[in-house]
Length: 125
Image 1 (cartoon, rainbow, N blue to C red):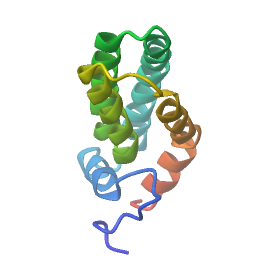
Image 2: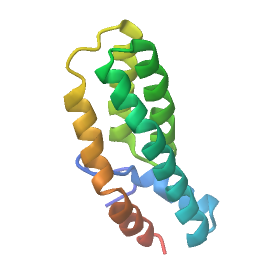
Image 3: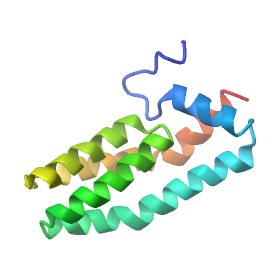
Image 4: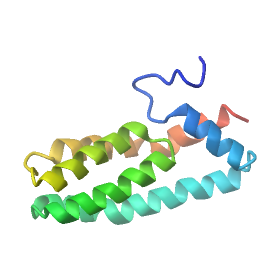
């Protein structure tokens, strides 16, 4: 499979992972730090986002979803980033009913983050 042909159900954008691997010159410690930084940010901000959804705080939803969208794109989590984008747009439009399924999808993505990150980056070694 060519890098540009990332499967629809793939957690990561393989082109982005290849780019990160190249930037890191294959340094696994550096790549591990990138993953750890993303996970820390997610674990810090996602509960705040969940709380904002429960409290119907559309401005906070928009801000936190925007932050997590960018972080997700930076590590190649394009579908997760797209989910955060939907939350961001819902917050911006103040149409924040029924966002829980999107939050659940994001949480499901994150269950596989560590395992998939490692497996995907090992392809480039």
